[in-house]
Image (tube, rainbow, N blue to C red; front, top):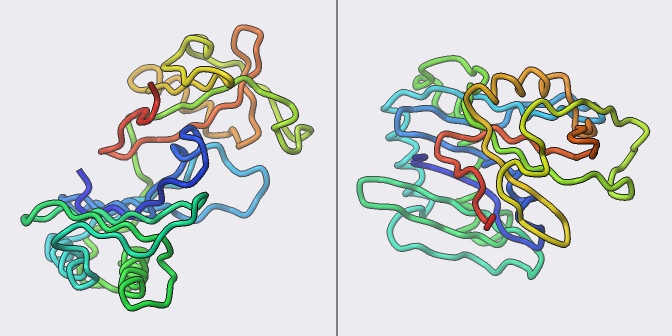
Length: 240
């Protein structure tokens, strides 16, 4: 489990959209810090994210937990500010010897001191190489994953921007119409866990794919969201 996790949740987006999001930072007890690396400013963008892992020494992990406590991420759970009806919130989760603490923030950029302290903590977690120069145990490398969440749904031309840039590829696994768990009508969104040999088959096809790549399965064209899972991610939370 991550001992520090900073992520956005909520808002009016449906579950199959929010499941595409990644934490701004996820730090694990063994010192792995997983963040999103830079992506070339091209369109359409790649189908797979650029997840990177930096290893921090145990002294560095302890320092991060101290900074978290100084930012107010200890003790009783709390909520800072109110989120708008259709707005997402930022959730800070910290696990320590004292237990698990959660702080929910409606606007982390708000001008009050509590939000300011949390905004500074976000900056720290986004730039550990500068804040912890003596505690970086290994250079930043690509995150190697062994599980992937796939969300699929039949393609509707009206919902696909720049359809002229789309390419079509044959889906290599079990038909998408029956793969995984369905969210049901009115749209047939499905969520699946891909691992093992299936992941070995699919991953090389995703490497050259982009966000407009379409997948043909049993004569039906689908859009697919491919989401490599972090170590403590649930495959399909929110699906029936």
